[in-house]
Length: 194
Length: 180
View 1: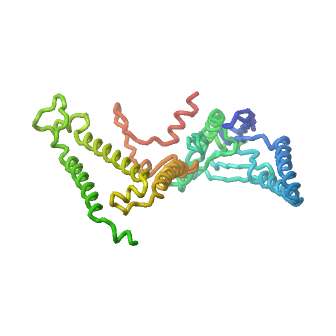
View 2: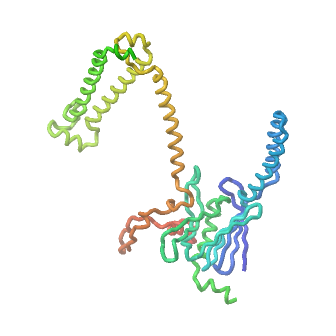
View 3: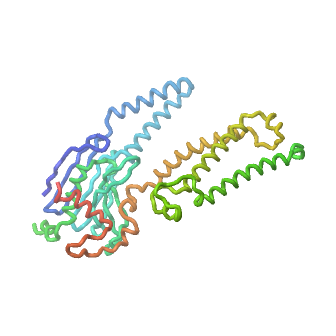
């Protein structure tokens, strides 16, 4: 039975975002989705106006009308590229006990990029501190083992890089994930009996 | 090229000999520094001077010598540079020495030095940023020494060995379900 719980937080930049928590069963699975506000209409209008105010006098002075048309095309293509590859709408982490961890990023154009990690190779989900550009940040990451038997680290996968949550949101996600990761096996089979 | 044939070598040699003698004087002072006494340290006996000076945290006499030599040589070099840069070439030639570096270098060398300093600041900062481990680098969590450490059991009532704590433990302690 799903219990979605939506909360508003502030990201590292100061902009608000929404964290939605969705749990199933008793420590069977948990999904945390961080949604950033989309591209606002005013931003789009401002960009278009800026390009136009700059290009129109230049094209008139240089007597090159093609400049204005090409600027419009570049702006359109740039918007497509931005929406498809840059602007992140939702980022989510789904932990299913005994099965694995799924990280997914969905962009403003609708493209969804998912990455699944088996529970055998998931060592832990932790909050690590690291230097990012000029500041030190807290970020949630999945520690991936070399293989099932060894304990050596193969990789670290940082999560929620675009949403930039602060420590309060990260603690909530961390606790939820730890609950699933350390759940006893018999609890996870509760759903199968029903 | 004709200047080279008419160069008064004797005068040049005299200048070089004077510089060499000054350098040798200072080298002598440097090497003999431990045995020369320019100051008296309170509470230091006459014999076993070096041993007493080594055992105390105060600076050794050599340091004073090095400092003085550095100071004097730097002041001398600065003075010579300024003299060569400002004195007109005719006056320099009239001393009998004609084989001087081009005056171009009086401006070029300081310009090179200033550019090097600015370059150094920029490059050092950039190198620091470049060698910072990225967020997904394993170096931000562990290193070969931490992975190879033995985790021995602590005796009851004993002090645990100094070692790197695993990140999971630290997280459970800081952000775990038992904290608030």
